[in-house]
Length: 364
Image (cartoon, rainbow, N blue to C red):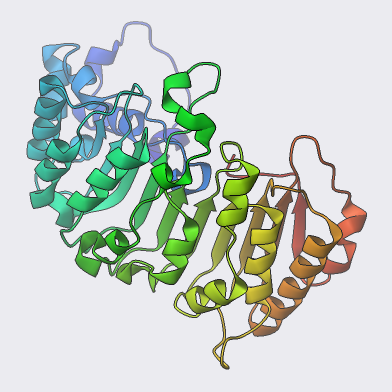
């Protein structure tokens, strides 16, 4: 595709898309079916076209699609109908032995049973390099996690999330006004069995509103020790104050967790309470029983509940100074809430240690 972009622009009205060489059309298709946004930073994924749809345009396009297994390596699962299962089977077959990217994202709020689709992926789990799963509620997500027990040696990027419905649209998806935290909690014992603990290539993990993050800190999946990027999305928009208090995490829990992920380079905390963020950055600035934490190069704090008050700013400053002493923190990103303002003067003292970006959410 880069070579195509370097070619001089010209236009010949007599040449149609059907006259393009197979190699050129293949590159166009490849660009169309590839994910167009980072899975882990934004928490969403976009695929502009589906290869099956393109292959049905005409016989020539079908021939082009059939000749290159790479075009079938981005697999989107939107439901559990017979047609969706056939689509999954066709993509798995036509992608042959190529590494695959799998996106599981329902189109509606009904609690479909996705275990059949996940079971169909099991023989191909060793080929998955990106796995993006967004479910509509925690009990369906728990059933999916229960099925993810097969080793995934090539898995590099994992996103697990609960879709956050709009209050005025999907009222049925928010029972008890989201004030029943047990309904959104996944048994922490499930995490240790995730992929049988065998994900040696895993470098990016995004967890979005799936469970009480404390359960991850206290009993993280075995394959997380080599992580480079960790993204944790809180549930401030959906949780009551009582729920937030119950989910408070101690810096002792953060200490133990950070000691296990010493290769971590990017930590992104989205919509946590200010207290929880403060506990995390306090743990970053200390060591537990003499064990150093990770040498972060990028720390992102996005829309903390309660805002960037002085205790939180002081804790962040202490953490930045400490992390810079252990390695080289290159970038600090602070994104205030919609009704909050944070001036450059609040963070001026940290600019000698790293680049400070205010209000610039690269992963929004």
